[in-house]
Image (cartoon, rainbow, N blue to C red; front, side, top):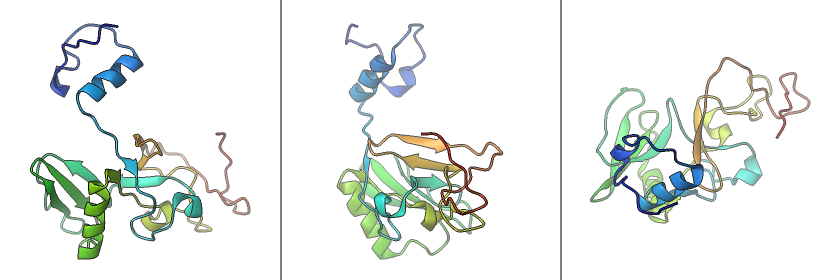
Length: 178
């Protein structure tokens, strides 16, 4: 494939009627500067690693999350307000969560993680994505954005199913194929 693209900004995507392979899309994104941050080593709240706690790393859900933005965001839901922290001249870190949860110490830790080119995350126990019967983690943290080892982020949709929990002795246990 010719490595000269007519796509110069994200708004150019879709303006041309040409077929593009997955590899071409990866090259385009890298040329546009779409940088993936790998997850930090531990949960922002309990400080446990994913190996210690299990499950998936959550970066956002309806009432708690961290994401970067090019614009300042603030306010919103009075009980779960958004708070923007200026990272540099062109980027903000937006923190969402229960009013008063973002202490100065947590904010500094988030900034430190971002400045280290990593992404902060929460474990399933800290965000409450646990079994309603036994308290162990769910197989899938529905309604959450999760980050993987390589920095890819995906959304676990709420599709009206019971994801079940990982505890084999729980009546809500479900084994999902890998």
